[in-house]
Structures are given as C-alpha cells and as structure tokens.
Amino acid sequence: MPSGKNVWDTELYEAQHAFVWQLAEDLIKLLDPKPGERILDVGCGTGQLTQQIAAAGANVLGVDSSPDMIGQARQNYPAVRFLLQDAASMTFDGEFDAVFSNAALHWILDAHGAAKAMARALRPAGRFVAELGGRGNIGSIEQALKAMCRRYSVPVPPRRTFFPSISEYTGVLETSGFEVRSAMLFDRPTKLEGERGMEQWLEQFSSFYFDQIPAQSRQKAMKEAVEDLRAKLYREGVWRADYRRLRILANKI
Image (cartoon, rainbow, N blue to C red; front, side, top):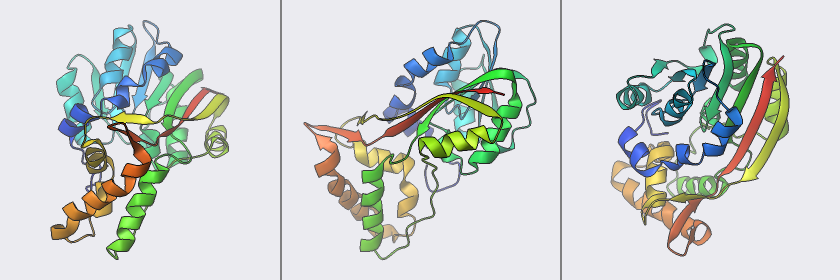
C-alpha cells in the first residue's frame, strides 16, 4: 500500500502486479461459482476476479475500501456491480451464498470485525473461500526495510498488514460464526516483472516505509533496500517476492 491510506497507483498495479489475480485461478475453481448464486468479492481491487465470477453466471458484488480501486474496477467492467465499502463495517445481512477474497484480508487490521461482517453477510451454511498473506509472508522484504529504517535513523512505521498463522486465523473465524473446513499455509515465491521488479513492488506495496526519510535521500534508500534483497530474492535475472499464502475454506454455522 502506498503512503496515503487507501491510495493506490492503479496504473502501476495493473501494469506490473497482475500476478495478484493471475495466480488466483485455482482459488476461483475452489469457489466454483454457479449461475444465479449471489457472491460477495471482498477486496476486489480493480475487478479482474470479480469479472471472472460474473462470467460464470453468478450475481456478484465487488467491494473495496479504496476509491482508486473501485473507480478503476468500474471503468474496467461497467456491467459488474462494485461498491466502496470497508470490510469490517459491512452491513449485509444474510444476502450471499458465498464470500470470496483474494490477497486483500491481510490489509485489514480489524480481522475480527471483518470476519464477523463476512459471516453476517452469508446465508446459513454459506461458504467462505479466501487466500491472504500468512505468517512469514514477505519476511525478507520486511527485514530489509527495517534495516533501511535503522540506517537512516527513522522509526519503523506501524504495521499495516496482518499475516496470521493457521491457528490464529482459524481462531478469528471460529469465534465469528464460521466452521473452518480446511486451512493451508504454503510458500509461493512470486515472480516480479523486469529488472525493476522489486523496486516497483516496494513502490506499490511498501512505500510508506520511506515516508520519514528525507525526500532527497529516498531514491538512494530505495536502491539500498533493493540491493540488500538481491542476494536472497534475485536468481537468474528474475526477482521473486518471498510470499507465503494462507488459504481458507469455511462455512457459516
């Protein structure tokens, strides 16, 4: 996430970070949307997966708390419904057959609030299919960014992500009205595009680490962080982010 709250560079996001939705094909298969089903896509971003769900014949609503994301989604797919909505404060009540979410719930620090809102949105026995960053996600990247903050004598910014373990997140769900049917934590090193792949990843998702660094030093600090990561995350001319994903299947009780 960039420096401003819920302010995203959607052009950079779509041009360089298409893996966010391209690697979710098997998650859509797990959702298995059916014609006529009502499905809520939480954290829909610029709408690519929402559109895939709609193409299966489902009646889908995409929600996101970012005005930039929702605005771009509406431009991309004018026939699909999108709504500006914070996941933890949704007020849907028993309206959906399924809730789907990909690469979004780790941005929501109020995990309990979001889980309760998603459970409330579902009909009895409705299904929940989600993937988010899990415990240890981007560990090497975060270490490099914290080291950069120390070098420049600036505070490490408050955490903006929630990367839970299996037990931590299943506990959140089970106290919010869900029965967890399966949970899997797995490594998924993720290819970034081009020689500037890591730099562009940092610009898109972690630029808030650079906010306290004097403006004249930010580019130098960025280059240093990238070089710190080269030994671990750059192989044979390709950058790969050290992603770990948590995949959850659950039903509303």
